[in-house]
Image 1 (cartoon, rainbow, N blue to C red):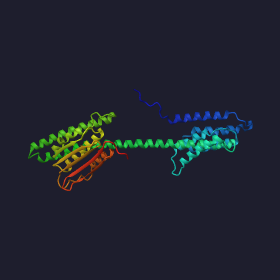
Image 2: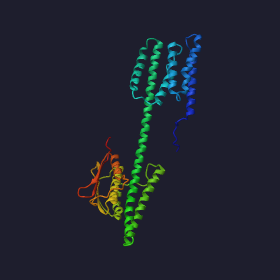
Image 3: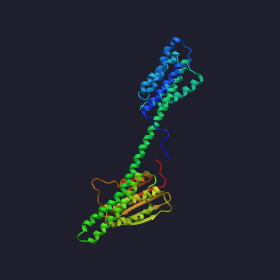
Length: 373
């Protein structure tokens, strides 16, 4: 199926050609339009028509200059009574300036819109002090309305650009959190067991062998998750190659953390089926909290409690580690930051800190419906 867009952004050369054709066509229309003025004024009339129409061909490259020339020629033609041009060229030039140029802080865009609208309504009903003066007033209102439209289109485009940039940033952070959770958990267990294996290799070779088996198993699990995630990124599909982890995957935490010296006890009481995104966030928070226990408190025990009330999930992970928690490496980590970001992404709350009697606790509440900002 061909999904190419019907309307594509034209190249600068094509846009210039279109503006040139528009300018020439409008000039011919103005120059040949019947007028009551005598033939003596015909050269001046042709010159004013050229000044009104032909600069439009360069409106994208020199918007301010084109607006000044076209507006002056339009006013002169209307006051002299040589052309009854309704300031269409000036309006097009004003639209281009408003679209391309940044808005000044004190620019009264709203006032221009209101005055232009009122002038157009009153001008079409009553007219001005004379036919030519009335044309100038209505033409100025048309130009002001075009300016307002240009500003509105510019603001809309800037909003779309900001939204796209924000979406890209949020997606980058989401991918970074997923990669961190997968890599940090796997590497944490591998690092601990590698240290154990090196320490007991000569004295207790059987224990070293078990540690190496744990390293191999954890490596395979981490590689499987990484391949799945990278496969999604390469394919660009909305649906992952494998289902996103949820509450069912919590059952695998004791088996993965046990060989690293952390005895994990699960207490999962969640009625019904929570939203998939909330369930994934709950699993990742519990996984990262257990990983922190592996890295900073092993050997220890750890209780993972996940409960639900039909409106939210509560995740609490408490370890009974050493009284003095091992500090993170000097470069710092992103585990707690990632957990906090996951909770915030669902409009939830998060807190973590040491317990008075020793150990460490992580708590998060994840509502099923995101709270309004």
